[in-house]
Image 1: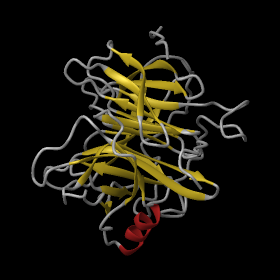
Image 2: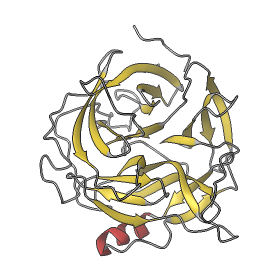
Image 3: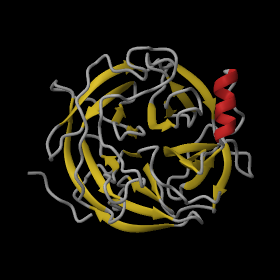
Length: 319
């Protein structure tokens, strides 16, 4: 039995085949549908009869978090059926609760076991990457934002967001603009999308970087994504000059927030270990301020990513 951390929830999803793409084997149209079940939220958005989960992971291990109690369960190690399972860099969850993960260069479907144990991952597609390009962030844009179905959105090592279709082809959507000094904001960790009162919203953790130089790694900022600009960029195939709608505050007080999940009036960010600072779970409020909920000294490499269903009830931003 896997160890139960003080922060536990059960997880379940169904196995998939290598032919399950965004639209069940229709690469290229950017849509997504899931007809094979998976974790189903209740009609009340996760309370009562539904399953409430935010997923997080290290490079090699999947965890599940109950956003009501912040209890976390170690689900198990990722396993692609070989002796060389890739390092998993992020995770996304669709509206039905099905889990998808990515390495730096590929998308996989995850089969989450009903009780703690190995998490089988099946290759869906290689991502069409450029020279030196690697992908670290992953999230689903809700249906209708970029295409009729849900669409995977990924962030690369230059902090640029891309839509990824079922065949792994990418459409550049844009970056996060510049700060007051003209230095670019880059994606520092993750993106999360959801629907609030019928409107699609998005959040990301960003950081200021010197042009052609280093980036701040101690004070990530929570930013609202300009979803209409992202949608226009996808439709026109012309990247937006900035996908930053607004910054929530001047900084969370924490860096290396590599995973993000939102629920109700809070964002839960998963910070990677750095030096003597262990991996941490950080709650971010509507002012953009972060507070440590728990530290994880036993997770040596720290968190790598996180994700939550696009059906999650989120109210952190005003209507």
